[in-house]
Image 1 (cartoon, rainbow, N blue to C red):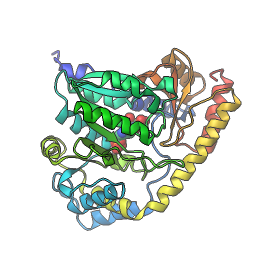
Image 2: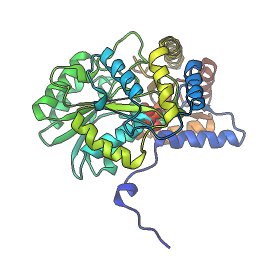
Image 3: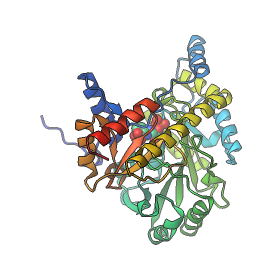
Length: 382
Ligand code: PMP
Ligand code: GLU
């Protein structure tokens, strides 16, 4: 039998970040020593207090379904975290999801219809494009690479593409894959356009806790943005909880009601005991987050210096744990070669809409980062 697949699924490719990481794991299983700088995943274990809270929750019998939007105590803790960032949300304006990815998926499904226009700032994380395509939306992309990945100098370009026809604009600061943290002036520019053209904005703040000497503003705190911003966040990165699958989104209640239907008919709820661990993460883990962030900062400095030693200059990231390295016009071939010859896994910039670069995730030990750069240089990739 030949199955006839939907347009919505056949028009997207598998996640490039996860695909390359799977390839690296395959090589490792074949006995090859791969320096995997592909997937964006902290190399630290989940902080012990969070693990304990998860175990305790299981022991206490928190193993059944929860309220679809998430347990009230977690939504209260999230509301408190958001309030600390200047975002006022009641617990009815929050949905807890199995990962921020699911949050974004639900938001896009709830807001983007066939043919609706969505604006991305390139380079943009791989799954935004796929999610919009699955919803049938049309993408317009603004290239920040000519401005060293800063948003402020690109506001004129953005102004040209944001119109009354625009449905959604996605802003991700600190950015995956560039590590850029957008200035307040840039965010105010976004706000002005969103208000003028009545556009909803998704603010993906999953890297907000991981910054180096800067403090990113939450877009929803700007005047005029409260009722048009959907703030997305998650536990994977700041708390090193990628495999726990926990995230959330907060937005106007009418969006929560609509997206909540999708949520209840798809995942039902996030995992019960994981939600309990999430409370512990938000309430008692600041120190561990600071320690991990300090380590990422040292690693960023190390990689920037190592690359400079080989004559490669990068836009220095101010947050997250990624950097875009200028490589070759055919970045796909460069990344394939780097994996095959140097056994270093990276993600081609074209997967993020910006050919000519490779994304490095420096959430790896200093030794592995040194090994990675050395191997790339030895094999002639730098
Ligand atoms: N947004 C961005 C920008 C990301 O890099 C990721 C990485 N996975 C996610 C959302 C989703 O994260 P998760 O589903 O693990 O919470
Ligand atoms: N967001 C991470 C990355 O960009 C994890 C993989 C994914 O979900 O895309 O590598």
